[in-house]
Every structure is written in C-alpha cells, then in structure tokens.
Length: 171
Image (cartoon, rainbow, N blue to C red; front, side, top):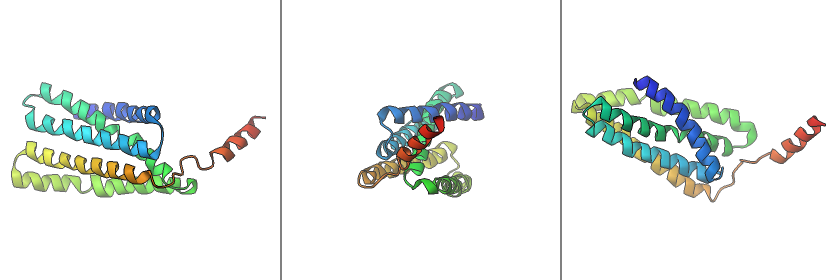
C-alpha cells in the first residue's frame, strides 16, 4: 500500500506542482516559493500522521495528502535547476542534482533514521524527527526565493534564436 500511495502521489503531485507553477507564473522565484510551500505543508501533514494516527484508516489519508504536497515540490525544484544555469550546462546540472539528492538524502537517511530509532525505540517519534527536516528544506527554498529576486535567470536563454530557427524549419 505504501508503495502504491507513493507512486500515485508522485505522479499526481509532480504534475500538480508543475501546473501550479504555470498558474502562478513560471519564474525562478515562484518555483522556489512553490517548492517551499509544498515541503512545508507536507511536513505539517506528515508529522501528525505519524504521531497521532492510531489506525491505518486514519494514517493513510494524511499520508496521501502529505506525500502529494511533498511531490508538488519536484517539478518546481527541477525547473529551478534548469533555469539557474546557462543552457549548455543544463544536462550537467540535472545529473549533478540527481547525484546530490541521492548522496545527501537517500544514502544517509536510512542509517540516520535507524540510529534515531535505535536510541528512542519509538517509531512515531523517529519518523516525526526525520520528517521535521522538511521544515529546513522549506526554509531553504523560501530563503532562495528571496535571493532569486536579485539574480539573473537563464530561463529564456536562447528562446528567441530557437524560435526563429524553428520558423525557418517550418518553411
């Protein structure tokens, strides 16, 4: 069930985050604010799901909504990675981002969670502590949105040139 929830919320959340960014205006600043909102709301929903739910029926709805908000940050965060570097560096940026996410997230998380759980012997508290790090992510995204106002975006780099090139190809 957990895997199914993750797959469905991953797809729906990622698409929803992209659509929300399009609606708000596709800029680096808005992408960072959207990612901040998604991770912050995810944290605020997931911690109660771990701490307060006593039955599967009460746990799953909060988990679904929390994961949905968490995945809403994926498309905007990817957009930031693409728009923050010159066009020629975008493939490198995305590959470096993927490696960084795994090295800083996927790799250390299980041992850290295991160490916390081994010490506390309370899975609800252990998962809540780990999930609390999403607030740090949310704050970093929000801080970056403030900094993004003052820096150039490479979002539209080459779009005029590519537009003329495509017009020539159509003739």
